[in-house]
Image (tube, rainbow, N blue to C red; front, side, top):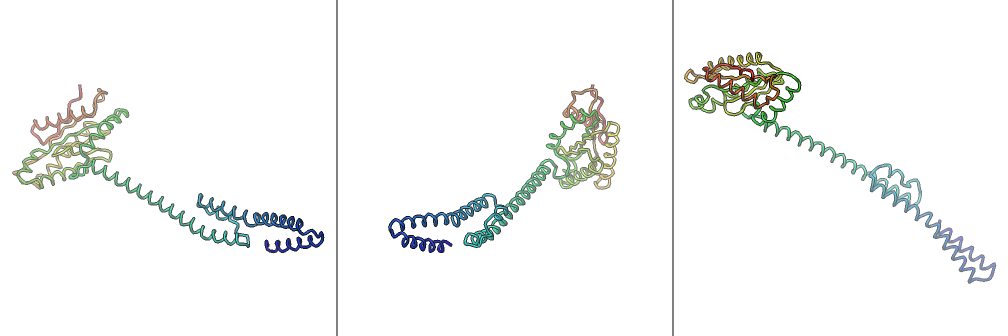
Length: 294
């Protein structure tokens, strides 16, 4: 198009020169008008479309979205349109790869977060569990006991703490070996889990000492629970241990005193321990409940 206009302009300048007979100024004026016209048309047909093309490319670079690609001047039939169509094809692949990569990053981030959460939860579970019996450990008791007591107080409910000790456990370890002692503790842990309700807390403090927390339970019912535990344990040991290694359970039971709102977790555990030692002094293989707090 520009070549055609240049030829037409050259012919027009020649005609003016012949008509007016003044070649110098007519030629200069004609060439100036022609140059300005050609530059203006070049700017309109070539410069402006390329500027728009660059602007769209900047948007594509910034947004990485197919909407920006759709606004490229692909309907033109000149070089600009050809370049726009090529950019559209290349850009579509780039945008798709960018979006796929972003989705992959989000998926990986989500999976990493889930794996981290699971690992943290499992680590916390292992830290709070006794590896031999699978019951809670002393750390679990330290973190859960006091908040549980506060919750029971606020709800106006009942709670009982049961302290358990295996009688003559050292003699079993010394006579039959630590492996036999571990098996006995594992059985006791299984027995406790089998008797506990879903909302009860069973803890191995260490060695042969255990604690059970029974929310929503009164002392009479807890005493029945403890007596059943003692009876089942005795039945098992009579059939599995030799007569030379007798063993049994001594159990202390203490209830959260409604009459004393200042009583806390430490007070409740201490009273259960005192009842446990009363059972020991009374001949072992029995359950003693603590007197109400004065």
